[in-house]
Length: 157
Image (cartoon, rainbow, N blue to C red; front, side, top):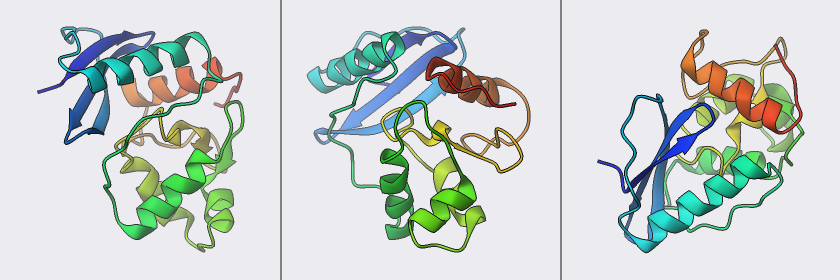
């Protein structure tokens, strides 16, 4: 199912590759069994993610599958311009990309198949941390978002 599953400070990270590109990164619970990379690209992705866990300022350089609608890709491009340690609200990101819909930006954030590489955790609600990966309530995914932001020096409730 995954080309690699690696340890993360908050659980595990599943990596899917195909056709010479990264196809998906998935946050998984700690109970998920690790899987050694089964191809060169999966090993490259795993290595870059592990470097990020050591140093939040590390930049990713990976081939990404061409996924998403034109609007989603515009949102993801806007997210990619947010530096480690910075956050924008969904509304601020909407304005930056020329949209008047913070909700649509939030939906595009949740549909991001390349978290960490396209750091959607850096986009938050105007009233707090917001949702994560289409999960709005408390729990594993919001805990992952909190860990990622704290790793980058940001504290948001």
